[in-house]
Amino acid sequence: MTDRQETSPATTGRLYGVGVGPGDPSLITVRAAELIGRADVIAYHCARHGRSHARAIAERYLTGSQLEERLMYPVTVETTDHPGGYRGALDDFYQEASERLAAHLDAGRTVVVLAEGDPLFYGSYQHMHKRLAHRYPTEVVPGVTSISAAAARLGTPLVEAEEVLTIIPGTLPEEELTARLAATDSAVVMKLGRTFPAVRRALERAGRLDEARYVERATMEGERTGLLAEIDADSVPYFSVAVLPSRVAALDSDGQPFEALAAPAEQPSRTGEVVVVGTGPAGPLWLTPEARGALAGATDLVGYTTYLDRVPVRAGQVRHGSDNKVEGVRAEFALELARRGRRVAVVSSGDPGVFAMATAVLEAACEDPYRDVPVRVLPGMTAAHAAASRAGAPLGHDYAVISLSDRLKPWEVIARRLRAAAEADLVLALYNPGSKSRTTQVGSARDLLLEYRDPATPVVLARDVGGPTERVRTVALAELDPADVDMRTLLLIGSTQTQWVQRDGGRDVVWTPRRYPEA
Image (tube, rainbow, N blue to C red):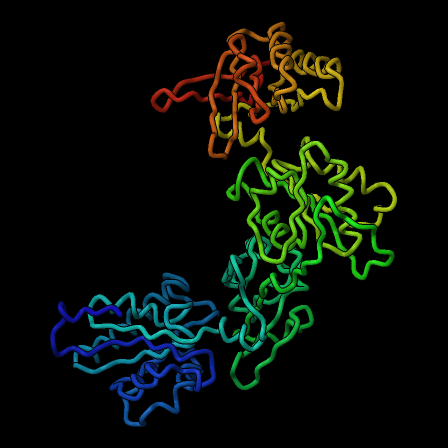
C-alpha cells in the first residue's frame, strides 16, 4: 500500500488499482471483490470498440449504481497522425485519463481502476498509478496473473529448485527473443497474436520448440491449450501465451558416474546428442546465451572437474567429472552416453575449439561406433580475447595463437612456429606456457623471440582472467621471468608496432595499431 493521506486534503477520495485476475470471475480475490462493491467510481481501459475484458470479469461484483469511467485508447496497434507518434498519442491519453480520475478523487469519491491479471504487471493501470499515486491515498490490490493461470491450466510446474523464470514480451526483435529463450531455464512469452510467427521461429532457433506449450484465454470461455508447434499462426489471438515449463521434470536420473559406465545398450530407445560448450575463461558472466541454454537443457554434464564446478548444480542432471589429462576417454564417454539417448554437454573452458575439447570429441565421433551421434560445438569467449580486453587492445592487428605445451607436439615444432610468427612480426598469444612439470618453455620462448624483438617489447601476463585471483600486468620482454608464469597464465607478446602507454592515473594500456606501416 502507498498511503499519501498525510499530504492530501482530508476530503479527497482514495485510488485503488485492483487486479481482477486472468478471466474467471471466481478468481478475483476477496479484497478485490469488496473494493469493487464499495467503489463510487469504476474505471477501466478499453480499445475503440468499447468492450473491456476487465469490466466483464468484474461485472458480477458491480452494484449498478456506480459511476463508470471508460478510458478508451485512441490507438492500439494502428498508426497515428499525432505529432509525437504512437508514444506521444498514448502519453497524451494517459495524462487526460488520469486527470479525469483526479476530478473524481478531488470530489472525495473512491475510484477503483480495474486491471486484468495484476495491476502492475504489463497493465494499463500502472500509467494511472505513476501519475496519481503521489497525489492521493492509493492502494494496489494484486491479482492472479495470466502466467499463473497458464501454468495451472497446463498442470505443469513453471520452475523448480534453482531454475530461473524469464518473462518475455513477444514484441521483442526475433534475435533478442532467440537469445533470451536459449539462455533461460523456463519462460513465458506474452503478447502473442501478430507476434506468434516470430516467437515460433525464435523457439525453433533456440532449440526449444519441442518443449513449448501454448495457452489461449486461460480460465476464460474459449480456452485452448496444446503443443505450440501444432498451433496455426492465423488462429492465435492477443490473449495467449507461450510457455517453456520447468526442465527438471524432463530430466531423468538414470545416468552412471564417469568411472562406472556399463556396456552400451544394444538398442537405444531414443536419440541423444553431444554439445561441446565453451564456458569462457571464468564464471557465468562469460557465458553466451546459447551456451547457458545448452547447459540447462542437458541431462548429463561431462568435463574436467575444475571446469565442471563452474556450472551451477541443477536438480535432475548427472555430473561426470574427471582429470584434465583424459580428454580422449572423456570424449568417448560423452558419445557413449549420447548413444543411449542422453543429452550430453561436454564442458570446456574458453572456446572449445581452441586447444580444448571440441577436437577430442570430433576425433572420436568420426570413428565407429559414434559416427551417427549428433555433435554440436558452441563457441565461447577465448582466454586470449579475455586477456586482451583487460590489457587494452594488443590483438588489434594480425596475431598468432600458439600453445607452448610440448605434451602433444615436440618442442622443435613449437620453436619453428615461434620463429615464423616472429619473422612475420605478428603479435603472439601463448597458451599453456608452463606448469609444475614444464618449466623451461617460457625462458626458451623469450630467448628465441629476443632475436627478433626489441627487449622493451610489451608482454602482458594475464592470470585467472575473470576469476577471483585475476592479475594482469605488463613487463618488458627482456624482463619476462618464467617463475611468474604458471598453467593459469596466458602471455600476449607485442609486435614491433605494439604500444605500451600509461594513462588513467598510471594504468598500463597495451594496444596494437590497426594500420601497419608501408615498407
